[in-house]
Image (cartoon, rainbow, N blue to C red; front, side, top):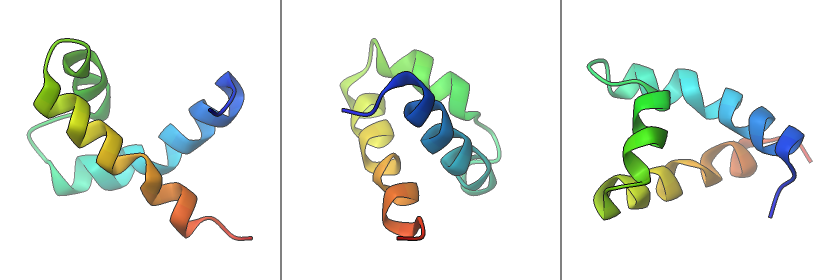
Length: 57
């Protein structure tokens, strides 16, 4: 599990791409909804590995 600083960094990497793909939504709104919706929780879970896969080694 990433620490808070690492989590913030990963989220900053995915935020712009998510909002480009979902122009009527924001990443912050998705995070908020994920606390109450299993569908949004799954969507958030699916998006978070994206920056980890694309990060330079």
